[in-house]
Image 1: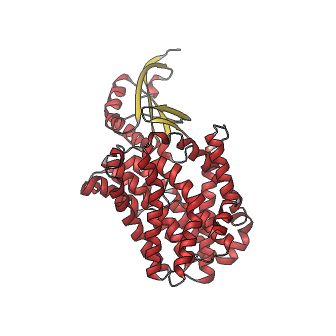
Image 2: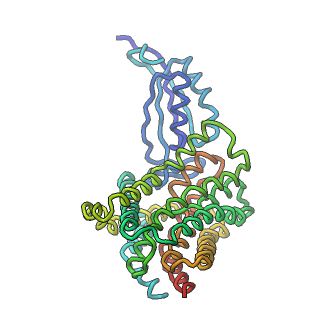
Amino acid sequence: MQLHRKKRIEIIAEAAIVPLLVEALHEAGASGYTILPALSGGGHHGAWSESAMSSAMQMQMILVIASPDLAAGIAARLQPLILQYKAILAVSDVEVIRGDHFA
Amino acid sequence: MFDAAAANLLSPMVLFFVLGLLAGLAKSDLTIPEAIAKGLALYLMLAIGFKGGVAVAESGLGGDLVGLIVVGVALSCLLPVLAFAGLTGLCRLDRVTAAATAAHYGSISIVTYVTADSFLRQVGTSFNPGMVAVAALMETPAIVVGLLLARGGAAFRGGALRGGLWRETLLNGSVVMLVGSFAIGWITGPKGMEAVRAFALDPMKGVLMLFLLDMGLVAARRLREANKLCAPLLLFGVAMPLVSAAIALTLATLSGFAAGDAALLATLAASASYIAVPAAMRLALPEADPGIYITLSLAVSFPFNIVAGIPLYLAAAEFLAR
């Protein structure tokens, strides 16, 4: 069995812009994505938790796996949103089976 | 008036809110799971909307309703301007955060409305059942005004973001639920109510109790962040509801509305959104500091309205109606 090298992109962003990010991912050519909930956290803007009533205080995580070239393109595409809103984007190395499954 | 204040303070709803506040301030780990809280909120909107629609089907719209809607929407447009004027320069607040916060005070809190509705029924004051439609219509104009205050004319230029925002505000879950339930209640009328009363009517007070418990917990946790807010801002959180209520009561008296309707209008004017408007503001005005507007609306104005405001506005409305 062979493992293929890909890039794993994790975006943690406020719930308000997750639909915008997903749209941008489609436009950038990502083959798929997964959205995960985030329970609570804290940072530059203070602490927050999912039980805080408004989606204004909630964060979600988007997970994308892509080839290294596409990953760079995705990061560039998403950068304006990441900079404008409460969000972080991290790219790491990952190995997957079914290499051709990911764009 | 003190009877009314006592009746409000000793109602299970307000007592559970206070319990939540105290438990949260004492750092208890009591939590209502988020999905349940969302479910309770959906239920409250369904119940209050449906009940209002059925009542309108039974007794007609009532002559005052058009006037109430006009005054309500006017308040939703004008109060943010007033709030903006009050907030600008307060505690070195920047223009965008001031505008975003102002939008909250022009919009409404449906849970505050439901609590007021419950209170008015408890003390036996009648009101136009179409008021829930006024509440629904007062949610959105303030958001538009807030955007205008922040961005000027540029608020209406700019692409996809704008489309998403309009969909989010006009079709947001609470508006759809409220207006939809109202319409369905109106269509099905008393017969519809009889069929579902055990679900749509009877549990409402209990659900409100549980929801207010959660609100108390959330408000207390937010309040612990409030020490970052300077005293004048905290004062604004109490003063703005009072000023808004006063303006609403003045307009209501000049328009000749009944005391119950005037009290509800004042409550709507005094209440500030803490779910829909923050979400809209995060999307439209990301530079605005949510720590300010969420804390003010949720942890200062909401508790004030629930504990002290509602009976106060009713007492004032009854006084003016004489």
